[in-house]
Length: 242
Image (cartoon, rainbow, N blue to C red; front, side, top):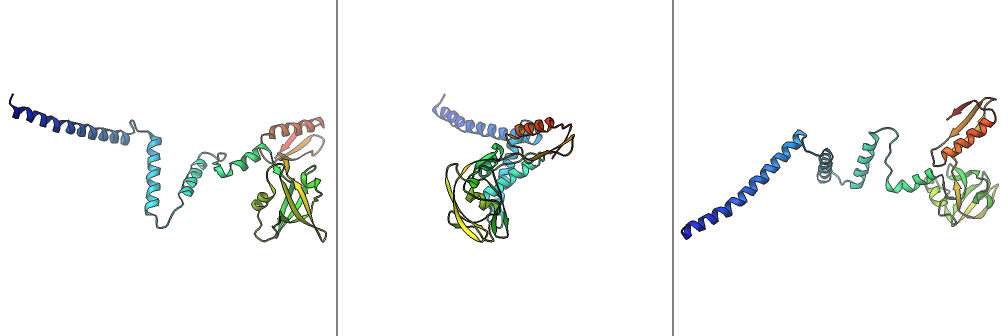
């Protein structure tokens, strides 16, 4: 074989091999598209994930105003969970501690129930044995300041109150209260405050018992059993549970 023929074969090999690879790649892409369209080997989760990412990118690139990327993601997740059933819910990381606190049935605080009347925080109930009771707080006291922060204002909210009064067990908090025309300061040490799952239980008559359940905490079952057992010992044969 002449040198010219040998060089020609080498040249053809150099050209043909990349062409074959290109054809194989094109065929693979074609088959992949074919099976995705026909639902053959396509992964529906991956396909819809790609769809979601595409729409999100389109919104971010083309929407007339700037968008909050995290808000869009959170809203999408919430909408997806709501489609399942009325009892499923998405809990963002920022709310997880509060939700767990409610489920566990206790938190660090001073031990009062309250309401906001106009612009003032009023203690409606002081839990027995709580830090608030030990410091001398009484139902009806109006709380004006928490750690020198004035809270008697029109913008007061439940969230702000909880933020100021709740905290780590053992930490100190000072409140300024108003009672019968006088103000005084009370120093409290936050304690572990139990959250009862049952608001009340009693006998309505000789046979009918009544239990009011306010939440499903980890201790709700034990609390319900204790209340029901007490009512049964008093002659309960029928029960109204709300």
